[in-house]
Length: 472
Ligand SMILES: Cc1cc2nc3c(=O)[nH]c(=O)nc-3n(C[C@H](O)[C@H](O)[C@H](O)COP(=O)(O)OP(=O)(O)OC[C@H]3O[C@@H](n4cnc5c(N)ncnc54)[C@H](O)[C@@H]3O)c2cc1C
Ligand code: SF4
Image 1: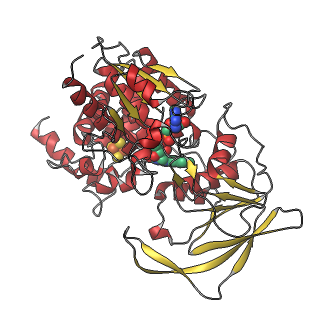
Image 2 (image 1 turned 90 degrees about the vertical axis):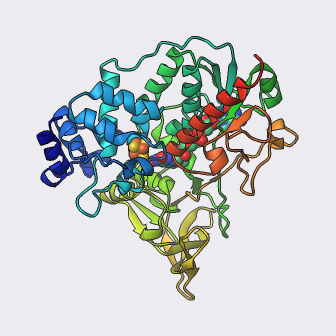
């Protein structure tokens, strides 16, 4: 770059406003489950990337859990070298086309961008999506399997953790087999995150690529039940546990046994995914007043799913305020646009029903915030005498998730866990069982896709180091 161009690019951020990718109007998008954003065109991607001021110590890289080499791929994108930019983005991320869609960028890379305070941050997520979609569309991804190194690794679970670990190990020449309990691979990417945030063919495309790189998928196999971990440890040189944490936290209030109260995942799966999973009893949403309990990403997804499925209203009940709500601000804004209602500082204390045992209302108490708790968030406390009833015909519980318990006596149950029930791991992400590694939600608790990818990459390196020291 000439020094003149360099100078221009250093100030481009003050001349070019941040753009966001085209977003469908709310009235249109509540009529389907398709993604709400589309992509930048080439000219906009180049212009937006040119806003990056190329800080020598890039804060965005510190904000990204994968330490993505953002300024470098911004420079390449600004020059129109999209395939090279995408290749660089893949050097630190196994699922960039997915993270760019689902990461809460405002809390991660974009939240850390040095431009905040002076101007709007660089549109990092949208540019990451553009370059990686460009690479898929222009044959920029190599599916040739790596030469085999003679070692085999079993991966349990095909969520983002399992997929990223498989990708890393397959590139190093390991023979990788993924064991997945469900009939459809992808974990929460398919069976949790709604299609309006991440269309399912995007996940299928990534899985196809892994298959072409030699990764084997064995579906409908529940390790610990159908096959034992001990059996896998005999057949494979190492094991990675990426089994997530999908047991819903219970609703512990009077009336929880009424009909018309459902957990979040069955609702999301039934309404979003054309899949044989969890067909179960159809959950009737159309024309109903839906109350969603909780304030995380799952709650936001349930509100927006209910509205797409014809709910008369969808109301979120959350015991803290907006500032202390864990869900993504971007998705909160999208939910508001689509007609979701939010009642902050409101805690459900009982569910009321009719003579037929069907829920009719949520009894709530108003809350106020006290001092910050151990997590740094201010603790809510009830305001005496503030109870009120909110009419509801369907109540969706989105209070988070715990690990699914293993059958007593199973070898998985013998793996050391922490107080919450997550696998305990060392600095290489190896569990208490030699050669068995773990990462993602099953270690850290419900978290983010990008964190599962980071753990998986670390665990793959841990497995590689562990096996390097052992005779073949
Ligand atoms: C509704 C919802 C919305 C979300 N939205 C976002 C978002 O917008 N952005 C974001 O970054 N994160 C989001 N998350 C969080 C994110 O999806 C998870 O943090 C991430 O998927 C965890 O990845 P994982 O690989 O650890 O586990 P999972 O994705 O849970 O995958 C675990 C897999 O292991 C399989 N499995 C479990 N036990 C066994 C067994 N015994 N044998 C064989 N297979 C087994 C399961 O069937 C599953 O397929 C959301 C989560 C939910 C529930
Ligand atoms: S992986 Fe997530 S945090 Fe990292 S650059 Fe991409 S969108 Fe930002």
